[in-house]
Image (cartoon, rainbow, N blue to C red):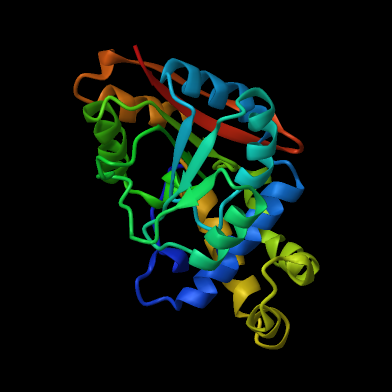
Length: 256
């Protein structure tokens, strides 16, 4: 099916911050508990090694994604690992919670645009579950900015444009109902807007379906790379790997 780029609540400036945070908190919890990103550990290690750095600058961090578990695994191999969380709409309570899980996490409270990353944020760039938020012209700018900054980048999407992925998103409200009492930090508002006024499961349901429809295919990610200036300065790997019952699409660009 063709990629479509339509409305997601999470992208809207007018959407209440606390509701957006409840949604990203849910994704962070689910990613860590299901060990969703386990298959991408070799790619993260390669990106760090080829970049000659032990620092990750995570773009579009949301609620921290699956980085708590990934961090615990990567630190076994890279003891001096450091991870900086950033987002265009920073979820500060989630960033603080993540930092409290391990002292090698840092975060920036200021809004960070993945299309134009501030020069002082040095390290191997990552994006988890966020490329689909960007239209092709903006996705291209993200990659072009990495080349211009001579900074390697790894992009990972834990869904695809397929019937199985859409079905999984269709039943996401059930996951929200089942996991909400266990999400930390605990917020009474999360309980209210999940069970009494069920806005959170409804917006997660809508945004999840649209996220699948927005996800770039392997062919489309290759096309993004082909449109870049000076793309030959980097090595590019694009593909997908199995992750439990689902898949992870990935794009790894490492400087030569």
